[in-house]
Amino acid sequence: MYICTLIFKHGFQLIVMHMNSLSVYDKNTLEFVTVAVEFCSWLERDFAADRFRFVDQATKLLPLLYLKVSLLPETPVPDEADGVATGFITEETYDILRARIAALLGEHDSYLDTFLPDMIYSDTPVIAFISENLADMYQDLGNFAYLFRQGYEETMSLALSLCTATFRQYWGQSLLNALKALHAIRHNEDIHLSGSQA
Image (cartoon, rainbow, N blue to C red; front, side, top):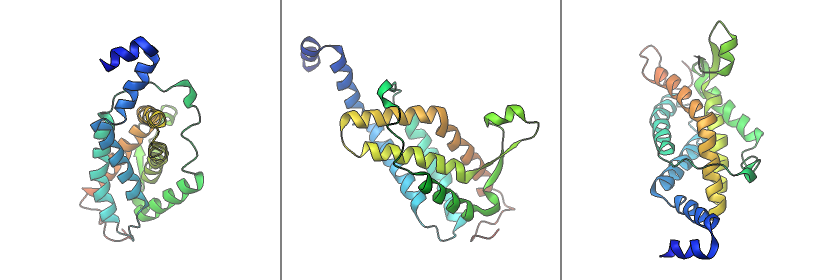
């Protein structure tokens, strides 16, 4: 009855806005938001040079994050979204986080990657960094969380659309690349992860 009244009085565009606002309160959306915020908070923690704990938690949190974002509905990004989600996580914050993770992982930060676009121009594998993958994810998810927590349904819906779009285009692959490298570190018996020295 409520939807029929909206169609009659206000037309199709309002119905679409109403349906989008429902998706920001959907169970899958709220679970994704929870995990995304936990991911950002986790990266902000001081691991006190406990490399094993960091790698162990990463190999558990990253698959959960991938699962939760995969359950979200695909929504188109509106044209007015350009530039909206940038700026909360600054380049300085990104660099500090990346450097902290790189210092914690030490020589285990780098890995050979075959999924980089540069790979098509190279005869040898390209070196990638777990710290960059995680910092890239932190930037997108931190910007998403900042917009989402403002509490305005239109902004929340826009943040969700942007986040799922950047997942498909960028940080989803970063997550999988980092997880692949972290898995190799976590389950390699020749690598001793205790402390900051290998």
